Image 1 (cartoon, rainbow, N blue to C red):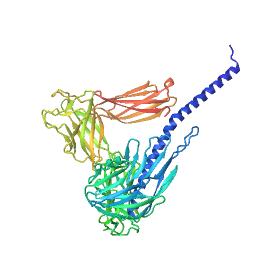
Image 2 (cartoon, helix red, strand yellow):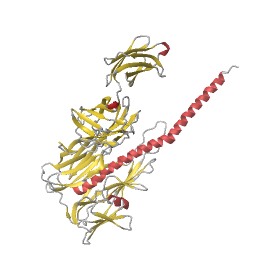
Image 3 (cartoon, one colour):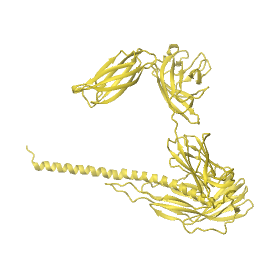
Amino acid sequence: MRRRHGERAVTVQIGAVLLLAIVFTALALYQVNAVPAENQAVEIDHNRQVTNELQDVRNAIGTAGFGGSSRSASVTLGTSYPTRTFLTNPPDPTGRLETTDPGPVTITDSGGTEYAYETRFLAYEPDYNEYRDAPRTVIEHSLLYNQFDEANVSVGSQQLVGNERISLVLLDGNVSETSGRATSVSVESLDEPRTKELEAGSVLTLPTERKAIWESELENTEGVTIQETTADDEVKIELERAYTLEIARVGVGEGAGSSDDFDIGNEKQTSTGPSNSSRLDLTWREATVAGNRQSISGSEATVTGGPSETVSLTAGVEGYESLQGGQVDFAISDPNNVIDETTFGPTTTSFEDGNATVSMTIDSEASSEEEAKVFASSGDGTAVGTISVTVPDINFDATNTVSTGNGNSGIEFELENTGDEPVTLTGIAIDSVEPANPTRVNDNTGGREILFTSDGEVVGEVDTGNFNTTGIRVDGSTNTLDRTSPFEPGQTVTGRIGPFRPDNFYAITDMSGQTVNMTIEYETASGTTGQQQITLEIDAPSIDSVEITASGTGNDRYDITAAVSDPNGDLSRVEFEMLDTTATVVDSSVDDRIGDGTAEASLKATGKDIDSEYTIRQTVFDTAGNSKTVTRTVSSGQ
């Protein structure tokens, strides 16, 4: 029966409607599921950024208070979502930065004299659409921490209680800003900082929003204890030994002013050199990385170090090489978590013989080219140091692996340090041997089971030294190397392991044709440790290079030249195969005249065998039947 033209038109319209329905359904699903997830990621990234910016504010408060100068820092209160053409976003997130109501501070010395003041906290609270569990972040007595519903998480360590000093900055003024943009926080010194010697038995009573965070922060701090109190909004810190109290007042926002009642102790003498009002030209004088000195100078300097290495930076004041006293504040900007923050310190110290030093350890997971900034400030002077991470290139290449010894029960190989760092081999684990699966390595004559040598010198060894021992287990457990010596870049050592045995104490395993998986552990000169897995194919020939050239017209033809080798010098043949995209062999060839280490073949595809690309497979065999295969992919006509 003939279909009418009108019926065909209806079919097309129905198809178009169905297609539009599918498109709108996909967009709706993306709007409901993907857009909120992507926006939440934006909000989480913003929250990390704000946390870093609030660290700058925290540092500015301390620097302004004890340095007698004004500081400012920027806080990005909100963020924006990426523009979406066919989809919609909720309103961009905002945030609120505000000071809290004043809380009482009481300092009671050992004689019972009380000094009463007030302080405020600075708090940031975001208004996100998706990151609904975002914390409220608070700067409280130099401690920056995140308040979650069920937990408190500090961002960096507290700077209130040090080894010899208690550094307390009282905050005054009003800040109340809600915005989606960045806002500037200006911090100014209100009164000259003061100092007082506090004996054991003195008590500091400080306001707090989360008492538990201070109990956690000071739990392992020697010299102080937290007194029990029924109030949840205060913490009582009792001194168990003498401390020097350094106390200052700073203002933020509006309504801050000096106080005639701020008279505790004496005015703090910040320096025996330049006065507090003058500019201190801070300069970097020295850096050490993993105990090795790096030459630095000037107010901006860069030092390089590797993961787990300790870095020390020393700053001084230009023209005051014998400066005594004078506070120096150290801070860090580290968005990539380059520095293990638990090792950074001191954050506040004084010049001694013209120098002030801060130390830190580069995180063990830091990556090459990541950086962190270290800031030293005193008075109006600032020095900036950049910690740049360089991960050493450590690599070993094993070649010429053969079976040796009685019944081929041992193996010998060459191991080259192809990296750019000298290392010491510290341990070795034999993970597996396949397919024979021996269980141990044991020289029952009392010889060494593992030996690395170079030019006759021992680079590392394992000697169980006992005729009746079970020897070294083939189970992935690490065996410590003795008599170690440096393994330099470009150096090649000879490794010998054996004899391999099954559970039978006197039996041996023929290692020819076996695959050994092992892990080598090392330590660099700077103390960085690591490991590398090595696979040894015993007595296996190898294909060292392959050259493929397209030739001919009207078909796909390829001329192949392979360079082959064998550690035992018993090469047999090379088999060449040409496979199409369905893994069907369309042509093959064998070259058994390879005494000079070169194998050649010509392979082609014609007619119905022509395809868009091919896999060229080369397999080299030795006379014992050991083999090695490599493949290359080529496109049609190339």
